[in-house]
Length: 587
Image (cartoon, rainbow, N blue to C red; front, side, top):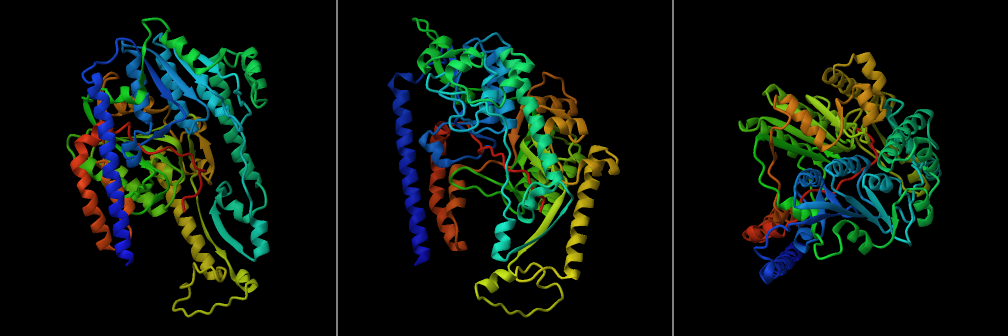
C-alpha cells in the first residue's frame, strides 16, 4: 500500500510538472508570437539586475523554478555578462535593485568587482534600494551598493550600516541539566566547532580567531566604501557601526546620492524621452552570449558539506558535495584528451575526512596527467573545503573567503545519566573491547579514548603534511597556521595558504598563466560531470523507497526528457544557491 501511495504521489508530481511545462511553453510562445519573435536585441539597452534574487553556483538548479520562470542568476554568468556588456555598444547602462542580498561576502565581492569594471568603461551603473537592511544589518548590502556610481534610497528606507556581529550559542549548561555529557576532542585549540557543547563562552583562542576574522572583513568593507563613495577613511570608520541611518541622514552624509522611488531612479539611467533605453534582465542577456570557443577547460564544482557517495539534490535546487560525483568529474576530465586544464570551484565548510581525501587524490592524479588545476574559492573553503583544494597548482580566494581551519574533531554525546532521569535502563552484549566505542550509553573507556586520540592525531598529521607539501611551507610553520584556525582570504594570502586574491576573473587569469596561454586567449569552460537534467533531479528527489519504487518514478519522469527542446528555452541562468555556513569541522 505504501508502495502504491508513493507511486501515485510521484505520478501526480509528473502530471503537475507536465502541466507546468505546457503552461510555461504556452506563455513563452504567446510572448514570442505576439510580435516579439524575430525582434533583435535593442539598439539601446539598460541591463537590470535583482541583487535580492537567488544566485546559483552550478549548472543544476530548481526544476520547478525553471518551469515557473522564477528569477535566478548564475554567479559566473553575471560576472562574465557584466564584463561582456562593458564592451557592448548596445548596452548603455546597468540598473540594479537591492534590499537585503542572499550573497555571502566572497560572492558579493565578485559581483562588486564586476560592477566596478563595468563602470570603468564609462557607462553608468545605478542602484535603487527600497531599504538596505530593514530590521537587520545592512552592512554587507551597503558594501555591495557602494560599487555603483549612483545610489538611490526610497524615502521610507534606511541604511543599516550597523557593523559586523558574531555570536554563538553555548548549550553546555542545558546538557548538564539534562545529564548529557559532550565528550569531544579536537586538533587543536582553534577548532572551535565543539565549543558550543563543551564550553559556556568563547575560549581565548576562539575569541582571538573570530576577532581577527571580523577585523579583516571590517577592513575590507571599509576600504570598499572608501573607494566606492570617495569618502575619507576616518569618516567611513566613524560611520561604520553607528547606523541605521534615516534617508535624510544618509543623504547628508553622502552615503546615498538620491532619495526617491524606483521609477525616478530608472529614468536617471534609461532616460525619459523618446529615445529611452529598453530594459533587459541580465539573465536574459547572459543567455544571448555567443557559444564559447577556445581552450577547453573542465569546470568541476564542489558545493556544501562533503560526504562520501554522490552529490544529492532536492527539489529546491540545493545540493551538497558528494565525493563520488566530484571525483567522477576529475576522472572524466583526466581521460578527456580535449581538456587542457581544470578549474575547481569550491564552496564548502568541510565534512568527511575520507571523502575529502578521495577528492584530494583525484586532484593529484589530474596534475600527474599533465592537466593544471586551479581552485577558485567561494564564500567558504574551510577544513575539508581546504583539504580538497590544497594540492592544486594555484588557489584563488576572494578577500572575504573564510578558509583554512586545518584541523579535525570528533566525539559523541554520552546519555548515560539522561536515561536514568527518564527511568530508562539499557543492557548490552558485545564481542570486542571497543565494540561499543560510539555508543551514547557510556563514556569512552581509557582504551577507547586512546584509539580516538590516535585517530585524531593521524588525521591531523595527514592534513598538515599534505598541506605543507602542497603549499611548499615547512611543516613546523604550517602547524602554526593550522591548529583549526580560520582565515579570511586576504589573510590567507599573506600566510601563504592561497596564491592570489580575487573572484572568477582572477581565477581565469591564473588559469591562463598555469596553462601557458596568453592573457587574452579565450577559454571554453565545460561542466564535468555532465549536469543533470531537471527531470533527473526530480527523479532523485522523488525516488525514495525501494529499488522498484525508484525505477517506477524514473520511468514516469523519463517522459519529461521529450520536453527537453522546449524546456531549454524556458530555463533561466543555472546553478545552485550560494551558502555561507559556519566553517566548522573536518569530521
